[in-house]
Image (cartoon, rainbow, N blue to C red; front, side):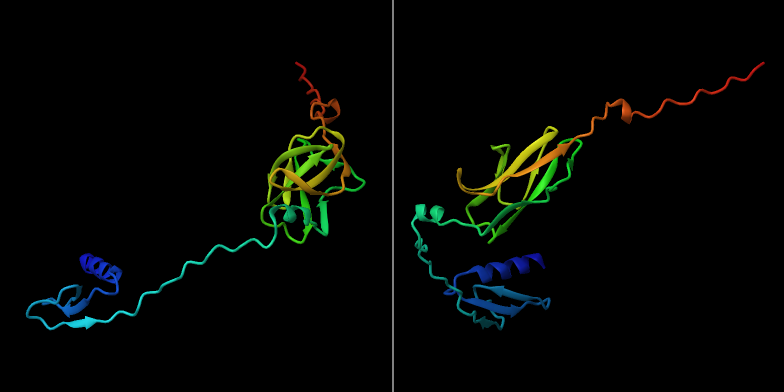
Length: 185
């Protein structure tokens, strides 16, 4: 059965100019071949024309490369998921922030955080960015839109406070166990 299927697939892969014949062998199996069998009735298989696609020339850019960077403006570019007046509790200093963009991030653009005025982390094309191992205290965070390595737009910085609980604090230790009375003899 497998040779029959392989023969059929090979026959279908032949160019449209090749001729294909179909017949039934002595065991009742349908056989496809490129040569008519001797002494057996066969019929010629007519294949529909193959599909052809014309190669399309590459689309010409409608803007000059430098102009795309200059015309970039997102109507909304802001960080989300940061507390306004309460401290951000992150015992290990790790948390994630969202980026709200309107319109959506354009192809070729990426987002990168700016922590305390300095670029932070790798550029990404997702609207959720992670901050890892930030010290406790007050910080500022903003997001930049990049084209390559060039900053083309920035959000307003947001100030927030990271609260990290010191797990070695005596106040967090469990109370010592109560002494057990000794039986008297």
